[in-house]
Every structure is written in structure tokens, then in C-alpha cells.
Image 1 (cartoon, helix red, strand yellow):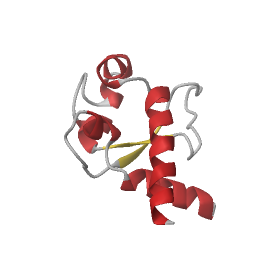
Image 2: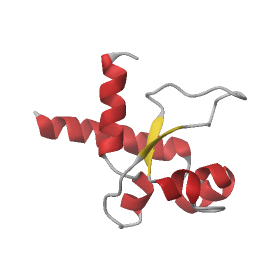
Image 3: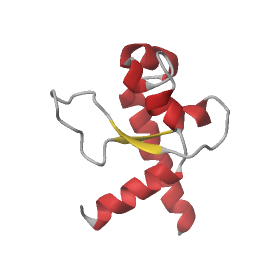
Image 4: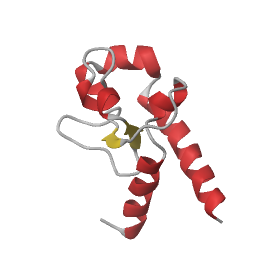
Amino acid sequence: MTKDNKNWLSDVAALGCVVCRNLGYGESPAEIHHIRTGQGTAQRASNKKTLPLCAPHHRTGGYGVAIHAGQKKWEENYGTEIELLEQTKRDVEELRLCRI
């Protein structure tokens, strides 16, 4: 893994869960979710195509809450992976500008 990828993943995780923030819950610890949109079976997106999700919104929350428990319903509830990826990219850029 390159230094750039490590820095990116660190910055994404530092944002906290994108869904929790959008719902007004504030920051919550985030896991890295590699988006599935546009990926083939058993393929994983690049490290630049990642979302920060808390454990419940990523894998433990059940149907409609966790993306891995039903992506279509999850996207109906919270937005598409692509929409949230674009938001995450903007948020990382803003985070990096604040460090300057």
C-alpha cells in the first residue's frame, strides 16, 4: 500500500461515519467500506473509493441499517454509494485544507 493510500484511508476514517453525520448524530468511529457499485463479483474497489461507516451502518445494524445486510434498502435510506463517495471526497479535501 502506498503512503498516499494510507493517508487517504486514515483521513476517511478520521471523518467518522458519513451516515451518522448526515443524520445529525455527530461523529462516530468509522470503519472503511470499499464501495461495491461498479465492481465485479469478488472484486474490491480501490482504496480511493471508500466510505467511512460505523459498525452498525457498515455490517452489524441489520436490514435497512447496515449496507452489507441489504445495499438497495440501505441506499434508499441513506443515499447511494456514489453520492456518499462524492461527499466523502469533498470532506477529505476540507479536512486536509484545515491542516494547512
